[in-house]
Amino acid sequence: MAISLSAPRTTELKPRIVVFGVGGAGGNAVNNMIEAGLEGVEFVVANTDAQQLQFAKTDRRIQLGVQITQGLGAGAHPEVGMSAAEESFPEIGEHLDGAHMVFITAGMGGGTGTGAAPIIAKCARERGILTVGVVTKPFHFEGRHRMRLADSGIQELQRYVDTLIVIPNQNLFRVANERTTFAEAFGMADQVLHSGVRSITDLMVLPGLINLDFADVRTVMTEMGKAMMGTGEGAGEDRALMAAQNAIANPLLDEVSLKGAKAVLVNVTGGMDMTLLEVDEAANAISDQVDPEANIIFGAAFDPSLEGVIRVSVVATGMDGASIAQIEPKPVSRNTTTQPLIADTARAPAPQPEPARPTARYEAARPVERPSSAFAPEPMPAPEPEIVMSAPQEQEAELYYDEPSVAEEPRMAAPASRTVTRIVDPMVDDGAAEEPLFPENNYYEERRPQKQGGGFFSMFGGGRQRYEQQASSAPQPQARSAQSARPQLQPIEAPQADDGEDLEIPSFLRRLAN
Image 1 (cartoon, rainbow, N blue to C red):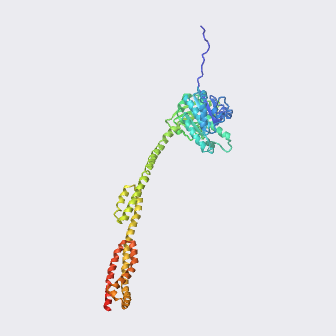
Image 2 (image 1 turned 120 degrees about the vertical axis):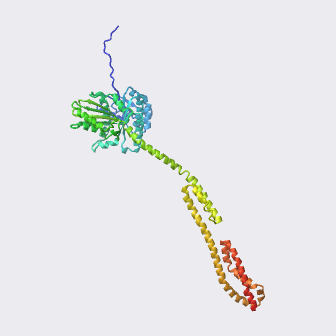
Image 3 (image 1 turned 60 degrees about the vertical axis):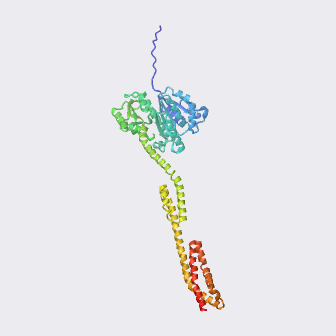
C-alpha cells in the first residue's frame, strides 16, 4: 500500500469581488480604475457598441445583443439595451458565477447603461451576490428627456441592488475650476467608485489591529437602499480629523447625509506612525454625525506606503430608510386630503348643473304663464317653495328670473287701469267742454234751416239724430282707441246715448219758440 507523503492542498478562501462596467461610462470607469492599479478585484466590461468595446483594458468583455444591435450600439434607447442584455443573459451569468460581491457601474440616461444595468443586477441578485450600484446622472445641459430616462433607470436598478450610490455629474462643478479639463472632471467622478471599491478591498487585503471581514461588509450593505461611500486623506496637524471630514463631506455624491444612516462602516488606515489618539479623533468625528442607534462597524489597518498620511474610508447605508419614514406620511396625508376633495368636486358638479338647471327652467316657465293669464299675485308664493326645494345655488338665479316677471306684471296691470282712467277722464272733459259748444253751434245752425221749413222733422227728434251723429262722430276715434287697448271702454258709450237724449230739451224749446 502506497503512502502519500505530499503536503495537503489548501484552497485560498477569499471573497471574489467583480467590478462590472456597463456601457460607455462604465467602461471608462473601469479603465481609470485599472490605470490606478486597483488590486484584489476582477473587471468585466459589457457594451452594445463593438467599437467602444475594443478600447477596454480588460480581457473580460461581453458583446451585448449581437443579434439585436449587431455591434452598432443601442441608439440611446433603454429598451434596446435591455433586450440586448436579455439576449446575452447566459454569458453575463458565466462572469458572475462564484462572485461574492459585484459593483455595477454605469452612466444613466443613455441606452446601454440605463437598460442593461438592471438586467445585470437581476442576474447577480438571482445568484445571491451582494450587489452595489454606482451610477452617474447626466448634466443639466443634456436635456430633460435624458434626465427622465436616467431617473427611470435608477428606479429600475434600485429594485435589484442591495446598495445604490448616485453621482450627479452636475456636482462636478462644485470641485472643478476654470482650468479643470473635461477628462479630469470625469476622472473625479470615477474616483468616487475607485475609493469605494478600495475601501472594501483594503479591509480584506491589508493587515490591521482591528480586522473587518467581508461578513461585516455584507451586514452593512445588504438590503440598505441608498448609500454613501467616501474616502478622505489628511496630513500634518489634525490629519485624522481632516481625513474624517473629507470622507464625510463628499461634494460629488447625491444629496445624502449621515444623520439618517442605519449602518456605518469606518476604516482608518495609516502608516506605522499612526497614534491611538488620532484613531479616536477620526472615529468620534464620524460617530457624532450618525444616529446613536446606528450600527457602527469600526476597523483599523496599516499601510507602509502611507507614512505621514491618514486615510479614512466611510460606507454609510440606509439613508433612504429614515428619509422614507419621514416623507411617507406627508404624501399619504396629502393624498388622503386630496382624494375626498376630488370626490367632493366630482359629486358636487354632477348633481348641481344637471338636475338643477332643468328644474329652474320649468319652474321659471310656470310662474310666468300663471300670472299672465290671471293678473293676480297669488301664483307668486307657489314657485317660491319649489325654488327652496331645489338646489340652493339655483335659487338666486330663479329669484332673479322671477323678479322681472313679477315686475312686468304689475306694470302691465297698473298702466292698464291708469290708462283706462286717463282715457275716461279726457272723454268726460271733452264732453263737458263740447256740450256748451255743440248746443250753441247747433242752435244757430238748426235755427237757420228751421226757418227754411225743417221744423216738422225737429218735432220727431230730427235734431236729436243730427246731434247724435255729430256727437258720435267726434268721440268715436277715442272710443276705438280705447277698445283696442282695453274692452272695458264699451260701457262708457252707453252714457253718451243718455246724454244725447237729454239734448232733446233744446229742440223742444225751439219748437215752442217757433
